[in-house]
Length: 433
Image 1 (cartoon, rainbow, N blue to C red):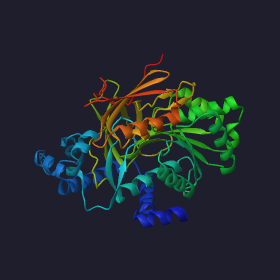
Image 2: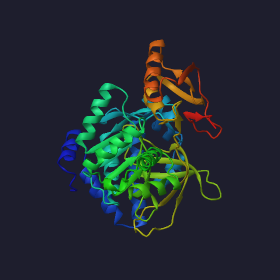
Image 3: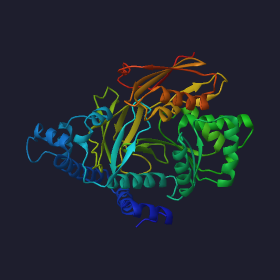
Image 4: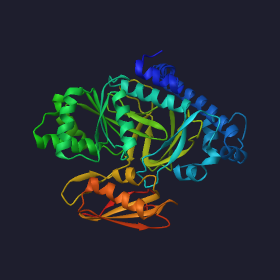
């Protein structure tokens, strides 16, 4: 069994997650050929759909309406007959999706679409998600116990901050809040990392880009940190950002594509190719002449809430071309991913817009924010049942801690927030030219 390190072994044992054996299984798959991977996925998919049909009301009903033409129908053909889902469909009919007998924990997306999604993730699925992460990261020499520098969101509550800090310490992570990236905090984080000596960064591309720009302005040498890899995830990584990050840090910049619901979907190898990982099956809906269409993901190990034909909301394509790395996984390209903007404060400071999702989550069913002027943001909200003036005051105070007291914050309750013309649901729109 793969060595995870003492701390991780203990954590996974307590959680009942067989991560080590899953790593061995997935590493073995890397040494096979493309047809072996197809066969592996088809068997996983067959088991998933059989389980969902027996255990989940939604798929029992769907199966009655989608009987296969014959017993020889492949798992992939059967999958194509099942209805598409997305977070709004599952959220609306969650009891019909849940398998209660699976040992599971509640998880939540960050709410960057304006609609936080709370769902169950079982131990079987989360073990494979973590195992796949360790396997993919190992392509770049990252071990499960490698030290990490994280530029990411951070909890806004006192209890959440304490839990997060303890978890970061336990797992060898040091964090710079993407909501507080002023010159002082970037300088402080730089000197912290000189002592911590991380092997890699894990970050939002925009946040890492702002960090390296701050290092340049401060005259600090990012190469002194000694990291080898920067993993960028959560939004589009633009070429100019990648070039600048590599220049300032001396690191290899690696692109990751995934979601809270499904784990890592595709990952960049050492030759720069994004590969679809074997823990998921990806379909492209209504592809154009270049093969780009809406991405649909089936997480092959999900059980407590089966994610089958799950539409992510992004555009991409799957290629059958090989790669110099020799891994038998399909190549993958993103055309349009999740892009999180920056709020420009009256002081000129720029704050990562994901702070909106962190502060508003739990108080609103949905929200959308427009920055009209440098000193004005309008927040349109679909309130939760317990929403009241005191909660609104609390939200305003939290936001002003990050945006400054000169930022005017206007709240407008509404019954519904329509999606964009593209079908996406952007949670932040800047109207500042």
